Amino acid sequence: MGTWWEFVMCQNYHGRSDIGRPDVALKCARIHDIDWEESGVGQCAGLDGSGKGREGVRLLRDSIRVTESLGITYVSVYLPLPPHWMLNHQQQKLHRRYQRGEGLYSR
Image (cartoon, rainbow, N blue to C red; front, side, top):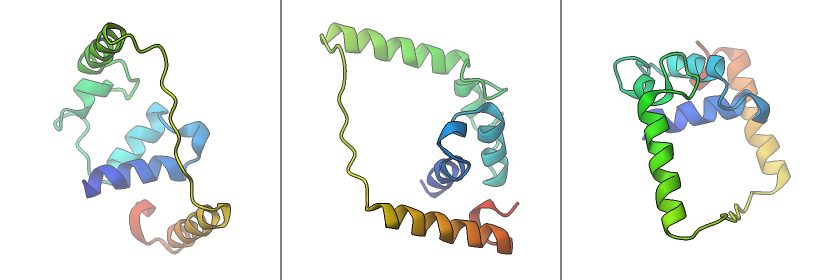
């Protein structure tokens, strides 16, 4: 779970607009020693990180079929966020670590 979470946080670090971009996903996988091709991630997400891998497309289709069969038309998700200053504080800590060449995003 630690590697997965670090991968997610690495993408978050690059900014909301870059989450899911193939170049960011591949970079974060490389930083956190995720073997994109051999671990199975590439088969799911696509070897190029495009999100068009055969397994991922199949999983999405299956999910849509199940959702439709249950009569679900939309999902409303409420995610309580920590106070704004906490997010800024966490981002500042990550940025300082990055500048010093430490931690998760230093490679």
